Each structure stands twice: as structure tokens, then as C-alpha cells.
Image 1 (cartoon, rainbow, N blue to C red):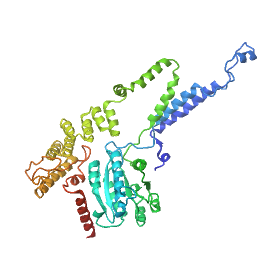
Image 2 (image 1 turned 90 degrees about the vertical axis):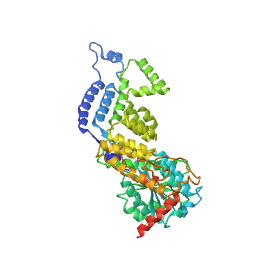
Image 3 (image 1 turned 180 degrees about the horizontal axis):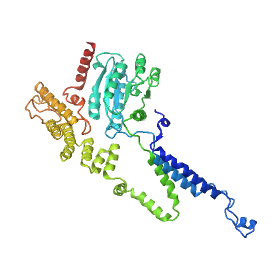
Image 4 (image 1 turned 135 degrees about the horizontal axis):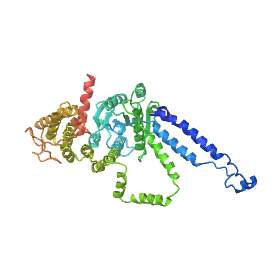
Length: 506
């Protein structure tokens, strides 16, 4: 973790010069308060001392001390203290994570019921649910390493492919964690947000230590999540630099540690991103100054007590609490806070800006409403967002038309151009694949859900699980191709891993 004091500084340091005259004024006034007052003239000294109240009490705190402290805090707040950078609102607020899962026969051991692999999969799924809105990639390895899914925010993709992983599908046996590390690094390089790598394993071959340490200086932080009897007994992992070890626990203690490690890696990497502005933390000192300012009022305690009682009791009803927030924040600002807290459904009710509300609907998974909301906005970005929503709703041809509309409005819209190219390729792929395969309807197998999207007349009705990346300004990623696979997940992965390993051997 980066040293906090190493990055702490002031954005407007010239304000600190104000502390010098402030200190002089405070010292002057306090010196006058602390010295003995002159005895009244015309009164005997011993009588004057007896009649003077509090002469020898030796008061230590004066009102001027509170005034000086309050003004000092305000000056420090104006100077703009900071020790962190502002996260880019267009990027994920949580660091992307590349999950590297070991798929070997040892992971079938039942010392952690039902098996190490199953228990590790359950933990990964729990972690994905907790990281809602953050991008996660999945990589499997044994004697060779293979990318299972690219970075995606859709947990359903990861669930389907994670459930199909088994040791017998890996083309080569062994422990090549070094190859898995390289794949994870390549995956995270495609993200603008700094991330981390999570190794989920039961053991690590000592031969991997040197390879992992060779790139420790220029690779993302690595977290080792150890599942099985060897938890806490792998000294070779302790020798790996820029890494954190988390042992399996039956409760959520391990997941909490993993989340903290990923967030710490994101914040540390953000400090080195010179493209982001420093975050002004002066508001913290301003609130402290406000609390010190309150005791200055000596009258009206009854009125203040009534106000405090009303504020406390007003929290009992959501409507009154919301009205109280309206005093300080606009509805769009409240919606942005809800988005940062990943409360997308509430954000859709708060946003008044049409574009922000449409984006919140997209994040909430209400794709039909998203497409309708974007349809009322006459911009290229809105048409692109409409296309993304239509693809997520499995309306592929309508999505293609939306991307074409976006390019008509702005021919230079790169995201829409990329989306249109991939969307057309997906439509061609699934229609051509349908020509060469049986849907199962003739034999009575059928499907859980039938989606009619066959304008070109090729093949029969199609069932394709299709999604799109988050946000109206992004191009579709490789994950779209993986959603278009209409076959058993395990067979598909085994075949793909075998082909990849064959190409590497050539």
C-alpha cells in the first residue's frame, strides 16, 4: 500500500500563509485574557482581590481558543488537503479482477466438501455477486492456461462457464501458474481501470515462484486464495512479491479480505494515474469547523433542541427523509449517489436527466424500458445505448438498426461503429449456425425460451443468450461471441482448450 504521508499535500498551499496572522491575533488576544486585570482604583488592594470573582481560578480555555481553532480548520480546508485521486466516473468504481482458477485432479479432493473445486466455485460466485457492476474475467489452468471468459460485468456468463469446468477437459496436466499469470496480465491490460489478479488454488509448484517474482514490479497485485488442507502451509507463496495470501474460511471472512485487497490495489494504482485529478478533502475539515461553530450561540437552546428533535423524528418516514435530502442535493445528485452505491433501481426513480435515467435503467437490467428511454433522446450516444439495450433484450436486428441510426447521427461515433460491426457478425454467425444444426423442435426437445429474430429468413427460430457491455459509450467486447455458443459448456470449453493448446505447440 502506498504511504499515505508520501502522497499527502495541499492543492492550494498559499492559503496556509493565512495561519501566520491568525496565530498572531490569537496570541495577542489570549495574552490579554490571561494576564491579571488591574485592581480597581479607590479600593484597598486586599478588598479588591476579595471582591474579584474568578481572579485565581487559572482558566485554561477561552472563547478565543475556539474561534482560532475554527478559523484554523477553515483555512486548512481552503488550502485543499488531499491524499487520493478522483476516480473517473466513466470507469468502474471497483477494480476489475482476473480470477485464475486451478483445474487439476487435486481440486477434486473432498477435504473441503463437496470438493475443493466446487467450494472454490461457490466462493467465486459469491464474490461476483458482491462485486456487482465490476468487471471480472475467468482463466483456467493446469499444465496449460486458457481464458474462459473475458472481462465482463454479467455474472450469468461467469456462472454458466464456471459450472462447466472440470479437470478432464484440460488438455495438459501440470501446474503452469506462470502461463495463467501472463494471460491475466493481458486481460487486465485491456481495461482502463487498474485491477488485480486472484489465484484460486490448493497448491503451487515451487517452480512458479521465480517466474511470478520476475514480473512482480510491473504486474498487477496478486491475491492467492488457498482452498484445501494446505491452507496456511504454503511457504513458497509467502516468497512471492507484491502478493497477498487469503486462506479459505467457512464464513465470509475470506471474501471480505479479498474485497479489501482488490480495493486497496485499485486505490494504490489510482494514485499513480496522473490523468486523474486529486480529490479535495477539505470538506472534512469544513464539517469539523461547523461543529465547533455551533457552541458560539448561547441563546435559543430550546429552538435548537426542537430542530434536532424534528430532524431525528423525520427519519421515521421515508418521504420526510427524502424531503430533507432535497434541501442539500438535487434529484440527479441523489441518483448519482445511488449509482455509486450500486442501487440502480432506486437511481432510476431519482434521475430527472433523461440520459442518466436511461443509463440507470440499463444497469438495472430493465432493457425494454432502457431502449424506450433512449429512443426519446435525439443523439448518437442515445442511439448507441438503445442498441446495447436491444441486444441485451435479444432483439439483434433491432439492435443493428439502432447502431446504424447512431452512425447516421454521428458518422465518427467509434463505439457505435464497433458495436455495429460485431452485432452484424453475431447475427450472421447465429443464422449460419442455425442452418447447420437442428433446433430440437422437430424432435420435440424444444427450449425454455424462443426468441424470434430471423428477418433474413435463414434457419429456424433461434435461441441465443446475448448481452452487451455496460454503458452507452463502449464497444462490444469478445464476450458477445461467447454468449452466442449454442452447445454444452463443458464440451465447448474442452474443444476450445484443445485447439488453443495445439496452436501453441505448432
